[in-house]
Image (tube, rainbow, N blue to C red; front, side, top):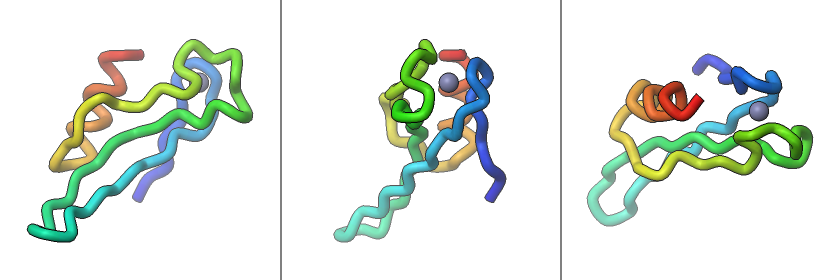
Length: 65
Ligand SMILES: [Zn+2]
């Protein structure tokens, strides 16, 4: 899995993978680490929706950026 970097500060973006225990549905989200880059406009930002694929989560991220 490729590593994602913030387009503004170059900080690390964490991939959040959630798996539903009842039906096995896996969803993805992205979260900006705010501790190393607290001044970045996207610091602490997390995608609002759960996506079936990582690509969809990245799309939302890129639109935000
Ligand atoms: Zn950033």
